[in-house]
Length: 199
Image (cartoon, rainbow, N blue to C red; front, side):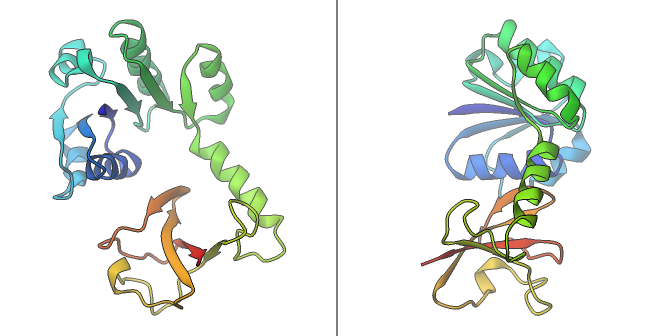
């Protein structure tokens, strides 16, 4: 799939690297400072410029894009660029990240597909607090899925160097309210929550 990503902060850069790693054709539009976050693992095209500039969007190939995802830190930019993509360039699938939960419903009424990490994080925290075991996701996704905070020895290690009970398979981790896939070179941080699948 040919996907244009608007914004290259923590979410946008990880999304771009993951999607390009899966074989999608990915173009990222952001400023020069943000584009540096992509690193060497990104196998796509990076364009520096204003995402609501139609010339920049055309340079990115919006006329043949199959999807656009706007994940800047600015809700207004995300909404504007997805509306341009949907209404002017007829991009089949557009998705806007909305940080303000009170505005998400309004944007959905406009026909926009939205994701609100704030709402998703709140829902996840509430569900976790209702569990009998704080460290477990029991029943939240699958009874075999559990979440564990990393101990001191694991912090700073890469996924490929981790050693765990043979009955557990590390699938990813939750970092800053986002689920991150457990890629070999991913470094474990103190605030992470490791997500395991019981074999």
